[in-house]
Length: 121
Figure (cartoon, rainbow, N blue to C red):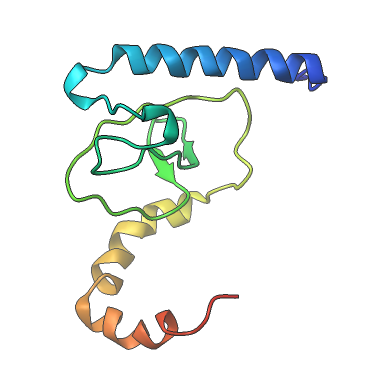
């Protein structure tokens, strides 16, 4: 499928996305609306963010970055009609749980702590 990337087509898609954003704000319950929602603030507790992810053929969502939340949150999922930019191997997906048992430990965190203290590139 070829996607029209002309300035007019991109502008039309951005306008539609803005309309959907405004509609989604109107649909939020009043208790979760912030007065300055358009400025990126969300109830003073947490900013809304977009995180790139891939959805496999079984509907599993794989985030492309790690996130930590203080509690469970609602999420909106937008499925794009394009292939993922990064292919995730089936082996990596299947081994993730097993490796996490050995790697996500306080001992491992301490062993690699020195890397967190290095300046970023």
